[in-house]
Amino acid sequence: MNPTRTIRVDLAGRSYDIAIGPGLVDRAGELSRPLLAAPRVTIVSDETVAPIYGARLAASFDKAGIKTTTVTVPAGESSKEFSSFARLMNELLDHRPDRKTTLVALGGGVVGDLTGFAASVLLRGVDFIQVPTTLLAQVDSSVGGKTGINTRHGKNLVGSFYQPRLVLADTTVLDSLPRRELLAGYAEVAKYGLIDDPAFWDWCEVNGTAVLTGDAAARTYAIEQSCLSKARIVAADERETTDLRALLNLGHTFGHALEAETGYGSELLHGEAVGAGMAMAFDLSAKLGLCPAADAQRVRHHLGAVGLPVRLRSIGGDNSRRWDAARLVDHMRGDKKAEGGKLTFVLARGIGKAFVTREVDEAGLRGLLDDAIAA
Ligand code: NAD
Ligand code: GLY
Figure 1 (tube, rainbow, N blue to C red):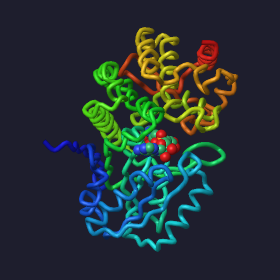
Figure 2 (cartoon, rainbow, N blue to C red):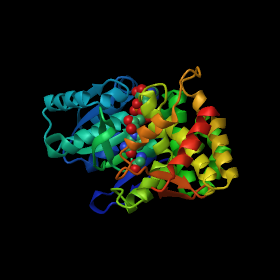
Figure 3 (cartoon, protein in one colour):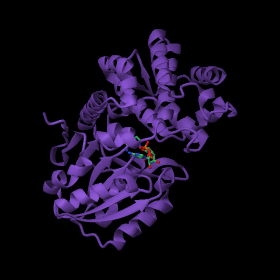
Figure 4 (cartoon, protein in one colour):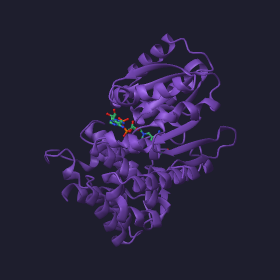
């Protein structure tokens, strides 16, 4: 049996496949070749991922007769700064690309967001392919065409909707991913169950540990179900013009505030912030009488049980951080999801019943934040 699963992201002339399975780094040349405008690619990777998988990926392109150059950026969120983006564009241009050159993002969400944005503006737009190497990137950021970089005003405030031509999610590359990064990605997996797929959430409660400990079948299933959900939502609302795609922001209004407060660094990873944020979104839903308290408890329990930091005091490790509800609300106001000064939340009527609202009473929100800080 062919172990590769393929999911189509249906976007008319910009449709593309997500391939999921083992060994795809070594098959990238053969799988990409029919899609390339010309047999020329530039791989963009980071200083952690390039030494592990860069040579194998380049060899695979070479075997398929594709000329390859590589540009490497430092690992971590700082590579999404404007200055790093400018440096990358100049390095890409040093290789004298033409409009038929394809960029290949080999890395996590940082490399994917950065390369996608670079592709959207390099020579006014060249094709790009995603080879995501973190669980978060395989289940979320590599699919759907949101690209972007950060500014001093916040994260991802400069960017574009620009779809890749292909996504190759090689499940075996997750073997080298640090457990903390894997867990952060798992929060985004579980998110799909909480949004609108209660059966998948049930599956996560039973199989989450297997996904995290490396069970190949469980991992593949989790990635496949996540990509099916994301592909369906993106196909129906590519540019977030209705509230459908906005459901993917479950946990993000709270998460964004936590990330902003902790400085977008190693104290709290993006996926960890989303995990804590989803627990808070369900707690707020229960507090407002929208969602059964038992569902909110299930969310908090499962995410905590797999090892995600769902309590504010567990963030940062040594319980030294002093959280402040007013400051967290201020961060929420600066979020690009806020509209006309109104905060946007994804809340839930139960597991798998998420909805978008801009009508959250600020006193209730402050109360929830005070409770979370005290817990
Ligand atoms: P990341 O790209 O920083 O990767 C995390 C760390 O893991 C890095 O140090 C990286 O070098 C390392 N790494 C990656 N793959 C590895 C592997 N296979 N083995 C060993 N080490 C490996 O972080 P991330 O969590 O993948 O992505 C976070 C970024 O994604 C944020 O900038 C966030 O804004 C963005 N994001 C974008 C979207 C979107 O829709 N575009 C969605 C969610 C998140
Ligand atoms: N990660 C949110 C989105 O792709 O819309």
